[in-house]
Amino acid sequence: AQRVTQPEKLLSVFKGAPVELKCNYSYSGSPELFWYVQYSRQRLQLLLRHISRESIKGFTADLNKGETSFHLKKPFAQEEDSAMYYCALPALNRDDKIIFGKGTRLHILP
Amino acid sequence: GAVVSQHPSWVICKSGTSVKIECRSLDFQATTMFWYRQFPKQSLMLMATSNEGSKATYEQGVEKDKFLINHASLTLSTLTVTSAHPEDSSFYICSARAGGGPWNEQFFGPGTRLTVL
Image (tube, rainbow over all chains, first blue to last red; front, side):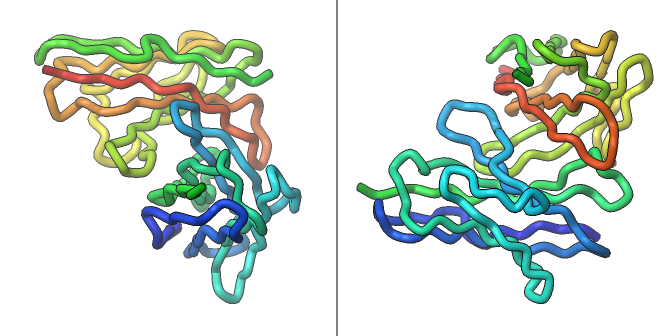
C-alpha cells in the first residue's frame, strides 16, 4: 500500500541554518511526489513536485528511489519559512487522490 | 488564478442539526472536487471525491448518508453534515481540480471549522 512517512512532528531550526524535512514513502512503481505547505492561517498550497525539478522559495527535494525518500531541503532558513509541511503522493491507480503524510511543523528560530 | 473559496469559514451548531458547507472554484471550472477532513494536529484525510453531475465517491469508513455531497455545477460543490454530533467537529477542507489527465494540481480552499455543541 502507498504510504508517506514524515518522522518529525516538529522541527526547530535557527534562522540561516540549513533545513531538511524528512519524507519516506512506500509505493509500487515510480511515484510522483509532492511537498505541500500551509502557512499560518493560510490554505494548503503546492510547494513543489519532483517531476518538475524546480526550486521554489529556495527549497529543493530530490527523489531517492534507493532510500525511498523525498526529503525537502533549504540551505539557509528564513523566518517566513515557518509553516506546516506535508509530503504527499498520488494513490496507486487513482491519480486524482492524494495521500498526505502527517506533516512536519517547521519553526524557524530568530 | 485558481482560487477556491469555502463558505462559511466557521460554523457552530447544535447537536442534531444539519450544516451545509459550500466550495466554489472562482476562476476555473472544476471537473473534480474533493472533500477532506483534518483533525487537530493531524493530516488531511480524504472523505470523498465528486465529479460534476455524478454521485460522489466516498472513501472507506466515511458514511455517505452522514456526509452528503452535491456537485451541482463545475464551480460549486456542497458538503452537508447531517444530524451533526460533537464528534463531527473538525476542520473541513475542499479542493478543486481543473481538467483530467495524468495528474493535475489540486487547489485548496481555506477550510471550514465546524464545532458541534
